[in-house]
Image (cartoon, rainbow, N blue to C red):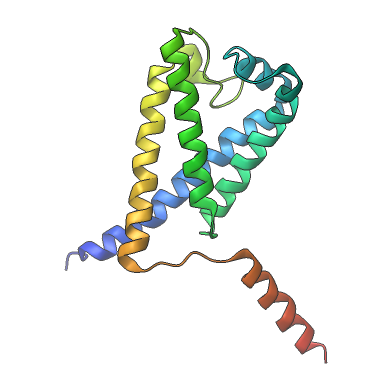
Length: 168
């Protein structure tokens, strides 16, 4: 018997979360390994003041990793964070295209194989557009199935309160 459409879409929802989460964990992790190199890549766009480059080179990848981990476990707020980051990245890429910049997007850190192969911002913008479409599917499926992501605080409270009662 063939699987029902809602079962297939439930499966796609999980795979979509895991895929986006994995991409963001990888992208943020590679940038965290070499934040100075990532700061140089971002500086090429000319939109961040010099004094904020290093804090941004640490902060942005940390947000990517946290959002990716949250998406893996379907934690409330993580899809919003990933979507906001994607829209930010698309804005920066659009700016770079509009300014005619010929720079590496820095999307996957300093050793980005896409940068070596294409060295262009348009392919990065297209890739981010596909990921936004994936995020929109996740939002739509959550709405259709009334899926409620896990609350970090509620989970932590439940873990700590049940642990304390066992020791009484």
